[in-house]
Length: 344
Image 1 (cartoon, rainbow, N blue to C red):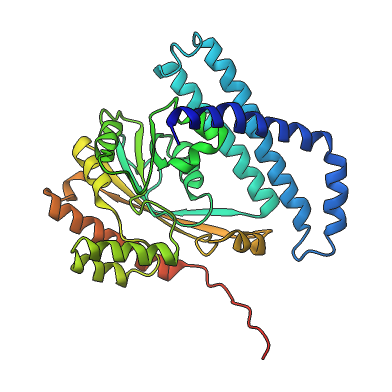
Image 2 (cartoon, rainbow, N blue to C red):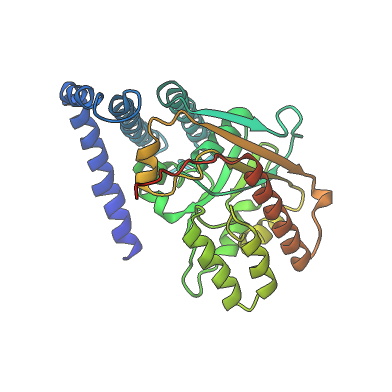
């Protein structure tokens, strides 16, 4: 599919459809409330349908409000002429931060979702640019990380995300107005993703945080097996054996990390592990766990630049060593899910 056609579908089909759906849900809200209330005694969990309805309504409402505000900003910037200037980028960061604060406040209130953070906190994190390398597992972990960086650490993230997230109308617009990159985890031949990542990590200032997910996608057992097979196909048998020993994370893909380290030679590194939602792999998993009543544990490790080795091979070893460490931390802190057993 051509990039022009994708743009038309995202902007002229998907975005208006989301706005129309939001209006429709609000107009018919009394009927939805009656249906949700009627289903409450039938579905397991405390008021599952009503709580889920409210989360969906909040999400759609924010999508529509963000699109309306960003349209106004586009007009105010001279029909997009200055939309990527530092002034308007700051406004977009404030929009994202405010949205995430309200959304997670509602998630805590309605879904009983709690976030606990361990590791370096402000003001112990020194002033200066940082490279953030995060484990990727469970629904919405990229949003949780953005919330933490913006709200707790007061950083302006430059994020590398999978290109499928660009289909979300508000995300697709806002992340094209601030420093960010949508990439494919399996790029086409000749697609130089490392150069794109290096460009994004260049010129970080004191409150910037370059964010990358080295695994390239959410952890699933199938992706883990494919990642190990990919290493063997490339002739990296020793790395494949190390990846087999990691049971909760995917083998990291070092190309983007190496490019970022090279492009930001003065930046410290923050490594992030998390657990609590990583057992939610399929849609049926998410539905079964609603309402969530869950705690997400985030663990931050700060690595000073002086402790990061030089040289490509040494840095790959360093990255694998940290991913093994994160895998061990997840094993110690993960949520153990009881698997229902069927009858004979």
